Image 1 (spheres, rainbow, N blue to C red):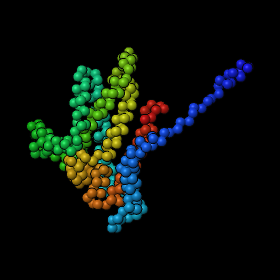
Image 2: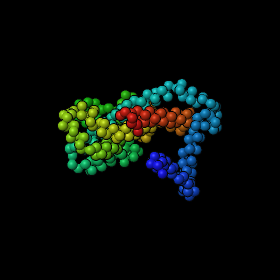
Image 3: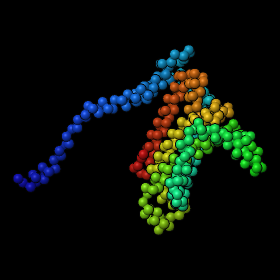
Image 4: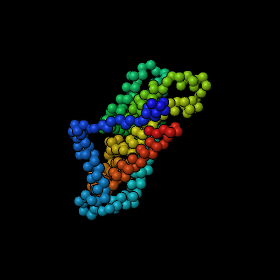
Length: 305
């Protein structure tokens, strides 16, 4: 046989044998699929149909896009959009900065890392129903510890959770306290995964201060930064428990009302299920668009989440 014939035969691609799925796989997956259908897919379809008035039995309920048009024309809706964006503008960068600073302190200078990580992670384990009353007691205008400290410093007491300008930032600070431990743990995991040679090479090249932070530190923990940013953005647009526990009604005068709280008010208090479902659908699509944009935004060329 000629030599070129042997080489040609060696380059022939033989496809792998086709894999046949075991029917028992569908049997074992059926309970999980049934639960997903019962508690996720069917309610999601019902919400979308109700938002268009197809499943609504309310008197005077609209059909088609009437619920969406009514919400888009409402001033309260656009107020909640601004409140949600304002909350995210305080909560997301604040939690990222606090979590990163704590992670750097634990990673570099302190020996008892595990105990400190546990200490900062404990607020994440506290339910909002328990954290809200504690913060309400700390910030109470008459007997709160924070206002007592301000009184001793020569300043008057401040009604943190019932002031139009301070209610939403105060709730954002409480949420930062609850979420900073998780972000610290994520950043620590990213820092421990970075080889020591990166820091040594940066020291040899004379990288210091902001230059080292921007060109060495942040690129080395970019995966942890992306995961943290994604989690915080989702939390910022679905915050409800903290606002409900602290203010009860999203007050004062809707200054702390966000989109999830408006959905609760439309569905449970005003009892307009088509409007609540329309708001829920808009919120769901907003979160999906935000996640897709974040996944496609590259921190490094050719990379995405």
